[in-house]
Length: 152
Image (cartoon, one colour):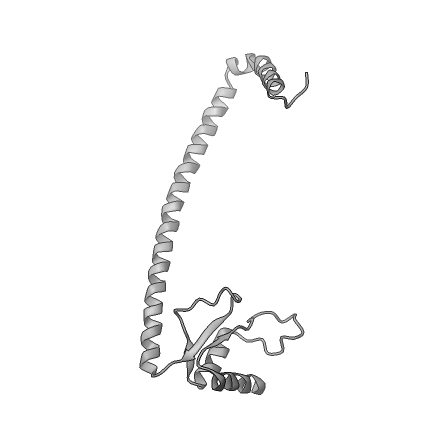
């Protein structure tokens, strides 16, 4: 933990923009000696006057990457986080509405599949279906031969 604090302090003294990545859950990798969650690293960076830049998506580096910059006043950080939160709450609401819409569509499709299966079962129970089984099998063989997928 002491080395992590020193490392973050050194990074922050070295530049105004820091692209940082640390896995929060890979305990099996032997080189990962201080596996911590993002809140741990955010606290270390904030102690140096840096905060995560919420407008920058560092996901191209790794799923856990973040860009840190000097944050100015606490009020500025709060405003940026609130704006970020509102945008993402809107996005979550929109995604939930889309899930609800698609669930409704899926319910309608499921109902149609059940109706068609019932219709098929009724058709298969008819005498006509049973009497035409040989003709349908012959048709299938002839079609397969015409398409070249089956030999005579």
